[in-house]
Length: 516
Image (cartoon, rainbow, N blue to C red; front, side, top):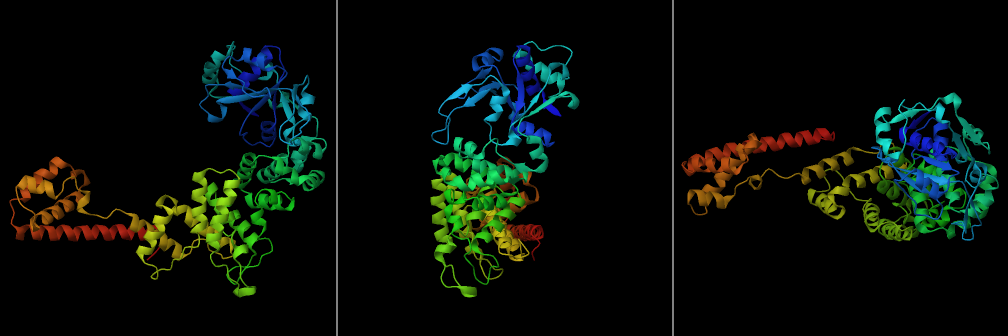
């Protein structure tokens, strides 16, 4: 196993000061899975004040006794390390927070309060088993020196660590099972969000939820109503951002949790569609999300993929192959805004996702829709959101059962978007303008000014480094000596060269999107 030097140092210091110190929770689970931990947690029998005396660069600002030790690590995940004293959580009246937290004397008491067996294991190390530099580290101020000496990591001898596993977590890990510690109903009564966390862990780890744990969730799913919308949102996002996001949403539905998070999604369950779809509204949304998750699209695209057709059940008219869903994108956008506001998403996130839902049904056919229509779509969406809109459309297509996510017409649309968004080659690019020419040559407005600007543009397109005011002013003086007839010939050549450059750029853009 490999432990970062920052973690090694903290364990060393606690043990030197005659305290117990253990790695605990998710990092132990991940180490045993041979996966890189996303965070590191340490538990100890030291009380908060005692931890603070060992680590001067630390702070404690919560009632659970957690002390955050500040390191000087270059790794963002290791800048702040949480150390939590052994504790016992008393009765949870609100199913969210313990009424009282008491510090425990033993590791066993601490592990008993944890949520799932795979998270209720600890690792004990001995300082003699840690490969550390020969020069002993005396205090926290030496941490920087330790990091440089160990190149950021220290290794534990795998054969000499002790894994404390009081609830058969290793067996559940091997069998890929999420099981509550002790009685599942008691664990969920303590914190109802754990029911969603079980689903998230199952999705992240690709595990199954154990039968009794699953039964307890189904029985007590309504407890989720006691949880703050912010905490539900955060857990929902963690599920959405897994590769198995669609399976996570389906598991929320099967366990009776989804109706307390986004009941609007369930409205589409069993609602058949028309000849353009082979799946019902709910399954279509899940398959769209599945594609977005597997492609690694961002949270905006994933949420929009899940919600883009949320308005269909309320807009459906008729049955069978010719049923219609007129204005479902408008209804869906309004519903999406309400859903995300209810879950306390930021205004910025709501606005972006609502736009993706509202315009996901944009129409485009090569040769049928003009550039002006494309420009209008870009104005409504914002050029910065167009790539995400096209990703939602691709997810929508795959969710509909078609084989290709990006057909020719979508590639052609990308080409048109880039072409219309590209700054045209014009005299506006120059560092001089018509007034500069009139001032330098002491002439009045006329044809000569336009001809000189065309010639200067041709010069700059050939060599962009020449687009400097002092150089162009010298060129203006030279060109001022030519007649209009002579300037006209030079300008014609410059315009021909500009057209050739435009054609080459267009050809390259077409090649980029495989269009003709």
